[in-house]
Amino acid sequence: GAQPFDQVPGEWRAGWLNLYHFWKEGGFHNVHNIMASKFQRFGPIYREKLGVYESVNIISPRDAATLFKSEGMLPERFSVPPWVAYRDYRNKPYGVLLKTGEAWRSDRLTLNKEVLSPQVVDSFVPLLNQVSEDFVQRARAQVQKSSRERWTADFSHELFRFALESVCHVLYGERLGLLQDFVDPEAQQFIDAVTLMFHTTSPMLYVPPALLRHLNAKTWRDHVHAWDAIFTQADKCIQNVYRDIRLQRKSTKEHTGILFSLLMQDKLPLDDIKASVTEMMAGGVDTTSMTLQWAMLELARSPGIQERLRAEVLAAKQEAQGDRVKMLKSIRLLKATIKETLRLHPVAVTLQRYTTQEVILQDYRIPPKTLVQVGLYAMGRDPEVFPKPEQFNPERWLVMGSKHFKGLSFGFGPRQCLGRRIAELEMQLFLMHILENFKIETKRAVEVGTKFDLILVPDKPIYLTLRPL
Ligand code: HEM
Ligand code: 2DC
Image (tube, rainbow, N blue to C red; front, side, top):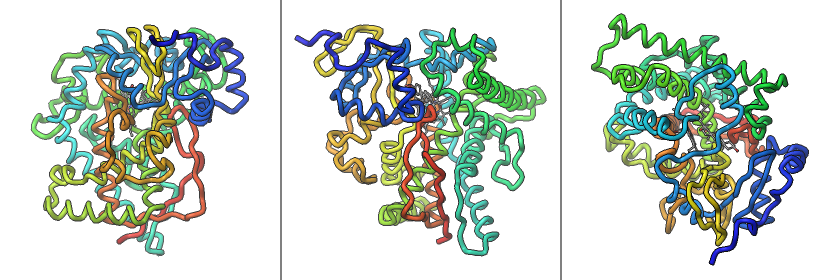
């Protein structure tokens, strides 16, 4: 029979002492490396306690499969304490991100129809395509300005704006104009607020919400201000759409945005719609932009792969005669490139679930209500799972024997990323247009590492060059 829970290796007895050590090792920016070295030390499963939070950590796709197959109808992940604390402190409703139980499920089912279902996803293509085309136009203008036939920069701010413009176009059916020279300062404030919100979350990650609210630490105050700015700005966007409907300025013919559809459907109370739309607007900035930045860096470092990818895109373009929906169906290598980018550079360091029944992981009995984390970053770099893990090799996804529970970047099952289809389309279209128009280059020498800032981000600025073909 399987071994009892208390035999699982790890240091889980002194939660506060562990948290202190964690903090001393610079753990707030290093969670991914600390986890990887714990798997080295303890093997494919270990138990841990940080502050009051206990977890079991796993790394193998087989264990991930066991966990997700037993997750049931109402899966729950680790609920980020500062996020919960803010909502309670300001009396703001939870959206799908933080809801649980049946309340989560009914919101989520309604949202899935408008955000994830194959029927609506095709209608996002023209909206997202327009934004990518504008990015190319902007890049060409920058090349002209530079007089050196190329544009070299740290693209993170450009990509933040691209990402916010993209997600807002599908959410609100409206353009913000963030790819022009003059950028609305309020939109810029929103972008800065999301980054600050993530940045101030990590030091408070293991402090219980009830404690946080009564804290007057600078990090907590900054965190509150960041969320305040996020909610205020999202609310303005939502009110705009609302007003357009009252004035009957929106027709139902074109795709008029996710928010419009949700309001017309009249299935969710306005406050719940607002909460989830705000979460999507905030969730749509740093995630796709950082992934695109990593993808461009990897392609700049592997000119051979970049050329093969460009060949695929140009062939697809020719065959589809410019029909982007059709084109998206024949770009296997590009889709594999995005998977490969997220393998090495996942947004989420772990996936987590609370077990609802006993499960057996690595021959240990894990009781119900245990927080189990899948070490996504560690798995992506584990040679047992991905041979030669350090090599950026998109083709591995096309030849891999079994992909079973290896491509988990957006999570799994009914609780997976709500923005997944938006994110994928947005990134596919962006890279398609870049590859059609520019060579992506970089200076070879600079090594870029990874930093945990709640999501995983580059630890230094990435300088890239776009050179017109
Ligand atoms: C949840 C990854 C982009 C909105 C998640 C989760 C992951 C993830 C791993 C947790 C899933 C789970 O527990 O199984 C990513 C990645 C992105 C991305 C890798 C892009 C590269 C986006 C975008 C949006 C978004 C663009 C908004 C449109 C959300 C929301 C949830 C979520 C609302 C919570 C869903 C729920 O609890 O029901 N994401 N995400 N994400 N994501 Fe994303
Ligand atoms: C952070 O230990 C590390 O997609 C914690 O778009 C466990 C954990 C729990 C939930 C994860 C979070 C980590 C990273 C960021 C994620 C989040 C769930 C959703 C969120 C992965 C791994 C994200 C970025 C959403 C954010 C939407 C928000 C801005 C409203």
